[in-house]
Length: 238
Image (cartoon, rainbow, N blue to C red; front, side, top):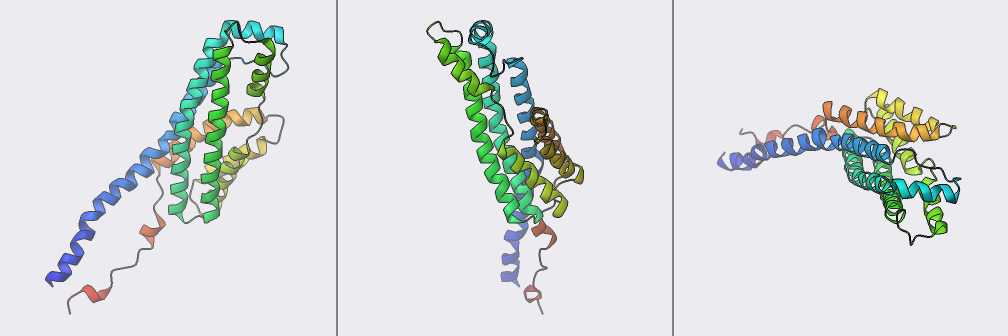
């Protein structure tokens, strides 16, 4: 009987640590989506009205002469937001794995997060570079226009669509997310294929904010905890 008690003791002491780790992952990590959305929208607001890709060179030189500093600050805010987007994607991945969703959906979230973070850093770096060179007399109008076209060309990102579709499927099939979150993800996917695709990209930030709050308020119960088998009766004294 002494040996049996000794074997049981580590399980009892390890449980609070596991619960604390689960609590952090389920309630704190998803809130990184809120920080991402706030920083990203702040970056766009700081940049303010950005000329489109068809703007003449003469207009661009005047624009950057007056607004290069705010474009650079906006680019830095966007770069910081990408860090929190990566944490949010990791929180979504962990929730999917614990909910019993198909592994392919969790893998899709992980890949989409990695690609989205890389694209986000590239876009933020373009804005920061434009802000840096836009006010320098040594920058030629042709070079400024080339970099501006690269930064002003917006299109629906495949990584965003993949992330939304994976969350929608996991919410509707495995109940890993609230149904309203899954259906709203599908609406955003459909919106990306309409003339309002840019609006859909902006609404994606609001969706991430709401998803982060929903995941933190109602954390999912790990499937392993619900299906854990009872201890074997062999440990009980005869």
